[in-house]
Length: 309
Image: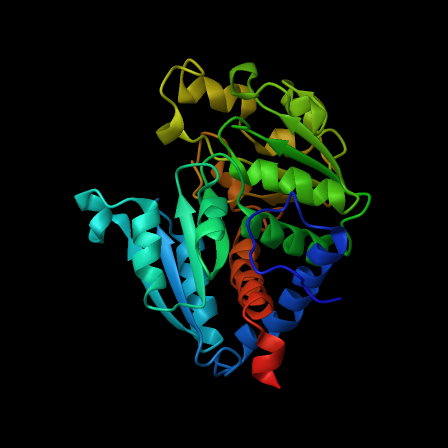
């Protein structure tokens, strides 16, 4: 089945078959990354603008690498070096970029709904690289690809998502994706970091030991201090004592458990270094799969099949 949408704005509106198409395409394209010459002409002549209003390392770099591997022309604009510093609005920035006729705009923005806003006002395909605390669809897709590679399936997996649930767009996208694909998700975090109504999406507990019991996979979420205006917990040390993933806590999960983290990690806060660097960790696999998933999204949205014909 082909991917029928012009944009990738979130996981919530996608059907399971659309998700499977992206994952299957990423699986095939991942092979290109293992070649001596990592370059294919699939998107030659296509232009992509990366518009990043928030700091990013993995997401921005993997989109740029994906674009280069597929031979697309790309331009990255960050707010620190753009007219945003002079007061230009998101819409004016987008309209000026559109006047240069790009085929796609990849946008990361602090406001929820920014990608949807651009999709309503731009002719270009829009990819959401993270909008506020709303969604981060390509992160959820790369997490799913990693789980499928390590476990052979998504259906029936028990996945614990632990940490700062209130501010995490990664958590929301993963809840929607994993449940659509037949996994069972359980959520855990401090009471002050659990948003109202989240229990309508998946079971929620404030007890980490309960959340980890018998899990096939554990996804730890970064404590997003930059989004916290108030005191959501007494100290980082206490957070680690109550909700940090330690070697002892890993033992509550299944023996073949895999541990994911979207990065950047706060070592000694949400995850101990012994766990992050341990045999359960698939965190670096996530980074590699991030390039493959973003290659798949570019390929499917920009007509890679036609370009390759």
